[in-house]
Length: 104
Image 1 (cartoon, rainbow, N blue to C red):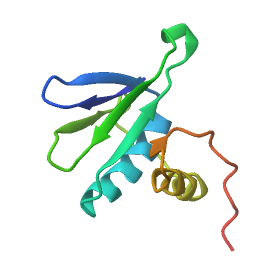
Image 2 (spheres, helix red, strand yellow; image 1 turned 90 degrees about the horizontal axis):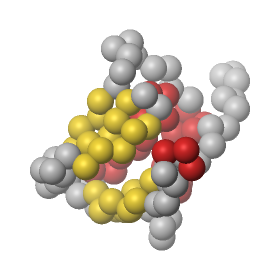
Image 3 (cartoon, rainbow, N blue to C red; image 1 turned 90 degrees about the vertical axis):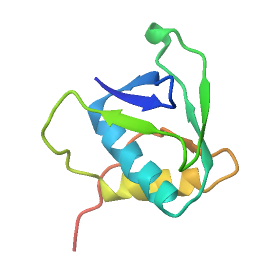
């Protein structure tokens, strides 16, 4: 289980490594373009449930901590879907991973 650590107080959100790798890719791309946005995290019910909303801005420190040191193969279809969600009025939230489209 990886972690998303946000802000100087390092607020921590535990996210599995595969999902975290995809979120990292989308978050870093938006912040590189200097696009602040909100990220909503809904933890599993066994982790307490509820909802947390973070305002992500290039000036706020954040980290992505992975349990596994090996790189994770990314699903392009999931990256595109997450990018579309992040551009919407509610900002980024984790959506289920779609089946990867075969490469031509």
